[in-house]
Image (cartoon, rainbow, N blue to C red; front, top):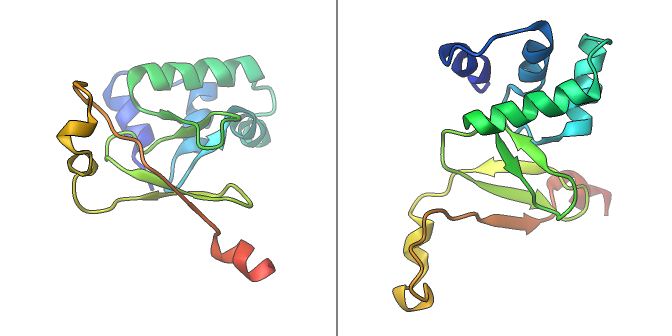
Amino acid sequence: MSDLLERLRGRGWRMTAQRRVVAEVLDGEHVHLTADEVHARAADRLPEISRATVYNTLGEMVSLGEVIEVSTDHRAKRYDPNAHRPHHHLVCARCSAIRDVHPSGNPLADLPVDERFGFTVSDVEVTYRGICPSCAKAA
């Protein structure tokens, strides 16, 4: 489980029922939900929660740096609560399942100085693509 709820409490974030349910939906490992998926799961727990509240809450969590926006398929953004441990993503090309991966080494070291074109590189995003075991079985 991630520690999203504890991190938000530690920041003094006002924990309304709506905010709590959004955080609970996002809490966990390998969580990469779209805003619509967050809303659907939150509405199962708190039927009166609005789509706007979910979007606003996700935006606040991103602004706080407690959730990361991830775009792996150039479609809907996904929200990742694993904001404090550097990681990459492994994505299934068929079902779009996403898993966090923590390879050893420094990905920045893989970019030769002469390929940086004078940039001061501050961040690296790596996405591995393939077929997950479930999709491989189904083929």
